[in-house]
Length: 113
Length: 107
Image (cartoon, rainbow over all chains, first blue to last red; front, top):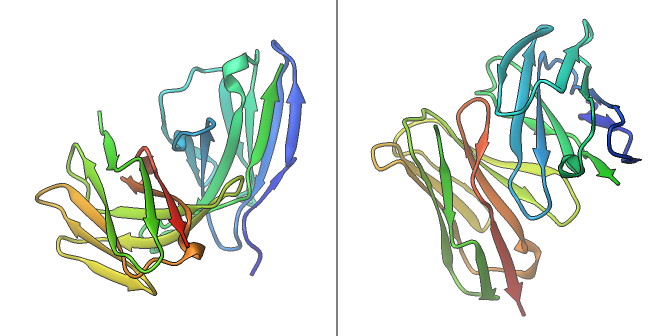
């Protein structure tokens, strides 16, 4: 069984640029959630997708957007990058009947200069 | 707004000792999760607690849930160095995380 994978592992961007992060869900999982984890803090919920539809959103501005594809892989897009967007971005997948136990990918470390 | 607090934020303990991490949350939740995070790594699921009075144990770790008190505990028995990590509790199906507890087990 393949776990959750994310790409790229690391990324360096400059302020104002746009970035796309990718996530492949664990096999059989149709729900994906994205989290932002700043250094020394707990993960913050960005949004969740279930069967290609947004299923809840945290307190993040609209420049954070996402997509889920028919194969349940997902993208997180961030426009107009700011210095404070520097963080570890984690995606997690889950499936119905699992009590929403979420399985996390290794994360993408984004640095905004 | 749902808030989740953990204490202590930092815990230094000697090998062989016992200790408890506390997780309080502000509004009703029917489920609570515990995760472990090693430095620079992702999160590993430890426990899923689904009902009042639920208790789960894995090795030296035991987690419990009191939904009436909105409190969960993670008890560490006879700590070993390998348990050194940051431990997070989280509630709701959108995973609202606590502040985390950095555990350092000293030989």
